[in-house]
Image 1 (cartoon, rainbow, N blue to C red):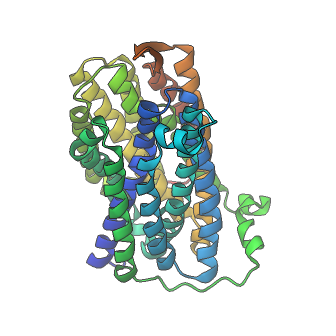
Image 2 (cartoon, helix red, strand yellow):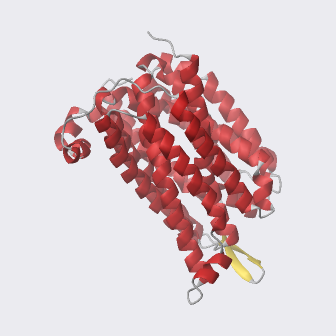
Image 3 (cartoon, rainbow, N blue to C red):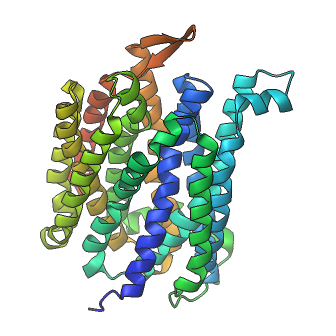
Length: 423
């Protein structure tokens, strides 16, 4: 069994963390930016999340297959990160004032909101090319099955570390309205790491594909392939239901803490939650490999379910920390176990292509369905407040209960996989 080199660990951690900075900003702060500076209509947030998910999936499918075809990953990673950073930095220039200046005859709020959604899609194209398609395929190429539970549990904490750094070190900038500087800092960082990746990464030895590109692109949609790799598609279904549950509440989480719980120190809450969840993810990394990835999913999902129910009832800061820690620990461990299982079941010569298939189940469908469920729940139990004469809608605790119910659907594909003796 080949050991992972220090250079590979540094490469994966550096690219992984930097990419998570960009995804954290997109998944959490674009929503807050849109809500706080342009429009509080949850429909815009749901539309942005859905549009981004579609672009991410199509991009990963196209560019992952292309990276398989040319037999290279590094150029897609490096160039993608460079352009990903530039498009992230551009967000600070999308304002109502600029929209009114450029389109004086149009509704400034509508133009600004649509501009945010469009730029989010552009940013997602570059990010998905670099991270979802090329980097994920690269990890599948270079990490052997025996190491994947440990690697995935380590990589799984990077989103939490990213959120912790951003919340504790930079969230105050957003609260002061310094959005342009906020986006610029992280945009430059992502671009710099993209340039460094060109010298840091060593491409895996891959043979370029000779099949016609369209044939390669449609490979994972053939019924014969579904039958041949049935266990892989069942694992992807489990990831889909799990990710839908996450997206029911996640896009609205900061808004909920700010405007429903009225937690002025919500960054402290998030910091404690993320530290505890990160520690749990690392501690249980080897347990995932030893216990069996699929077997480990059930207790991890049970922990997340308990945390979601706890979040529904929690109102005080201390109880939010407790419930949130349980919820996020379960969330990270389910992510690590399912992602490692999916990598194990992915055909070795189709790693790039199946990143796109994975995105359909793990990103596109969840980010369309989940936020729509969350928005419907918010509207059904609408709580509002008035700021400067404008009535604004506030997310309610029901989003966590809806997420808990959705999470139960994971049991269906897990049970079917167990019947096939998958561990």
